[in-house]
Length: 235
Ligand SMILES: [Zn+2]
Ligand SMILES: [Zn+2]
Image (tube, rainbow, N blue to C red; front, side, top):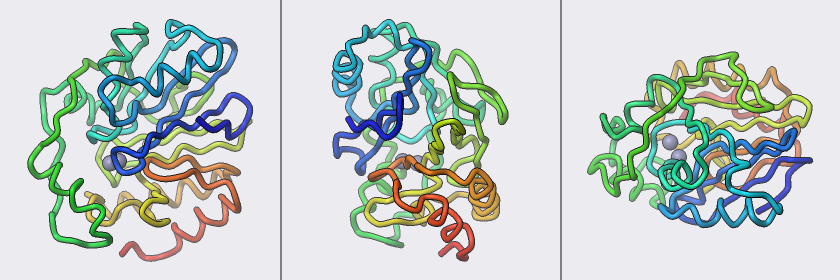
């Protein structure tokens, strides 16, 4: 667990393609964005205890989008905390297990390290433990201390989150830093035109910290990196 700014914690365990989750502490309530890969949610539960808090202080969980790496701990965390579960309507039925995520090409595009994730979507394996979504989020909603940004492209209901007072942007899978810094994993971008617009919108936030779905957060020159990624043609 790394504290990126007051009340902003990045969690990661290496699995799921160095997948990240973000725990936000504001006004005594905890909010969580994404749930890491592992089904037992141990790392998130340990992090909450490490802050001297109780699991029932976790009031809300948002899922950036319905890809397996981000959904692993959701069902266990819902059981343990009773937190309200949020997602965009276009992802909610994937989270609840009623529809599978759209497959992507299995052809290598960017890195051989990503092939197992491309295959995973193709084969719909491994599955996540389904969990109903309690509330649907739309652009402009509040989620705990953050603002919800509908940032489609990687998937139709892909969400990002902004906490302006902390200079924080959680970009989800619109930006990745693993295996290398890029405007999302190329093979996974379902709609490139939408993705380009979403990146452009992120530049207007001028973030100091960019949390990403896969890999370490960007903490040096974050706004410049977002501008650079948004100004390049998508590969
Ligand atoms: Zn994804
Ligand atoms: Zn992902």
